[in-house]
Amino acid sequence: MNENDRDTDALVGEWMTLKEAAKELNVSPNRVKQFISDHKLLGVRRKGELCIPAAFVSEGDVVKGLPGTLTVLADSGFTTDEALQWMFTPDDSLPGAPIEALNENRGTEVRRRAQAMAF
Image (cartoon, rainbow, N blue to C red; front, side, top):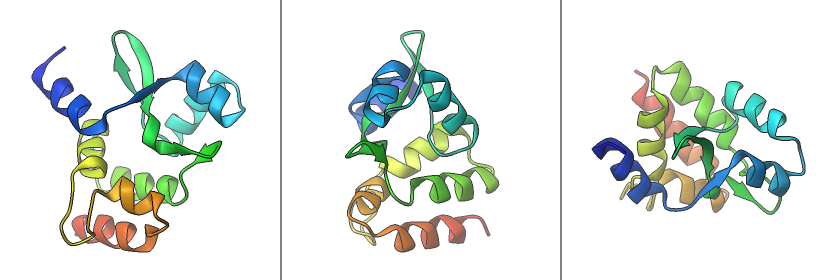
């Protein structure tokens, strides 16, 4: 594991494997892979296995506002690692990390910041 992976792991905290995410979302692991391809979720390899941040799933569904935010970040040229760093890094102006704001139903504020970074 390289230093960037350790930094990301420290920010993200808990990860879910594809199987765990599929079970939580009540879909197949292939559907979770499609969510990743469609920028509805972000997936990275951890110990050889594709995983997603556990914070991206809440109450059996993808966190509200996450897919739109991830699409804005992808369209802005963010890599997966950069998007993960941004989603989990605390921002005093929100306050908290963008993923925390999404979980608190403050998606408009998060997307506004993501769009502003694109310009």
